[in-house]
Image (tube, rainbow, N blue to C red; front, side):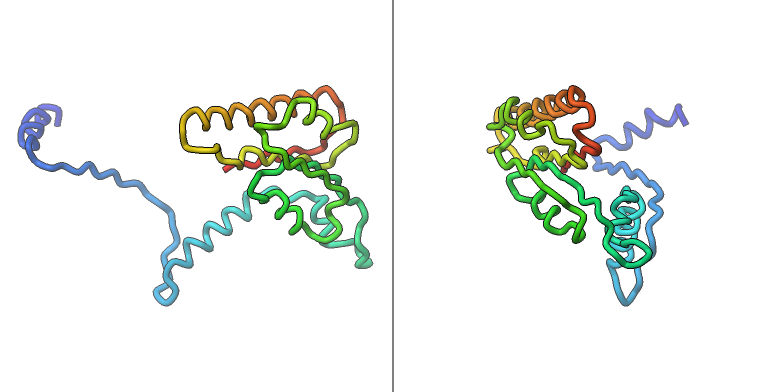
Length: 178
């Protein structure tokens, strides 16, 4: 094989060549009467099997043996994205799951360290949602991208430092990204 390479290279010169890589994809076969559905179903099953299901969430949605709603509403602090996805997620939470919410809508580029620390406060939050990474930069210019990412990264670091300083300030932290 190695001795054929110079001849093959010479033969391929001035000709269009396509390199074909073949790799096995274990995908389901499509149904003739319903094309395009099998892959979507596979993706849905894969996502559902990888999502973390909190036992606390199951208690809230299932209730106790007598059918009564289990108390234990969760206090949620949200550093919301500008598109409102975080607020929509809270609005769609199962009834009785969310107790008090505090939503910080100030953009990451305008929020100061002091304001972030004040938002966390001294309360013990069941969940803190950090949605700032969902926000796009002002433009696609390199300077704007770096400015946006730097602001989000700085606030994420300050949030983590604040939570480390205040033992018990947060039971769970969710960071939303693309």
